[in-house]
Image (cartoon, rainbow, N blue to C red; front, side, top):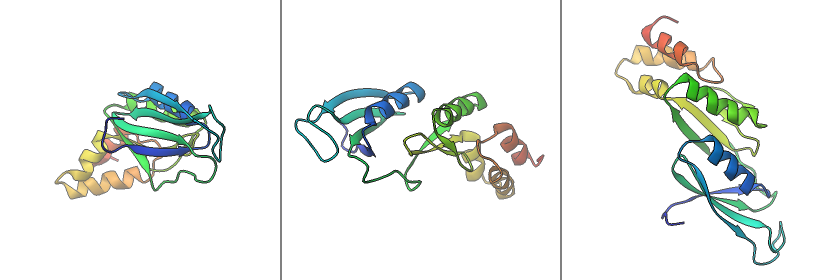
Length: 161
């Protein structure tokens, strides 16, 4: 890896499968080098995939096949900004439809337990705008959603919910 800062994600033997899924699903994502263990290690044997270099939406990552000791939690998530409902639906459905699960307010979890926020830009724009009443309406609308519905967010912003 040439980046000075790389996100290391812990997996239980499935780092390569996860990296391939992320590369196939998210724009500006790719799988780089796959490194095999030079010797036996606590959760594997010599020759097993130990680490996988990949990018997710341009962010450098390493998947480490460290074994079952640690699990992902909502304390870490990737937030992916989307521009359209079609893009929001495609990414959400890919994560949830590949063994993942829905959560609240645009959050979902992939089959490896990693959390994702599929966040339309109109949502973050509304929160950061000067119209605090519109931001509150949008926030209230978002709190009722799983996958974010852009039309409903825009309607709430206009006061038409």
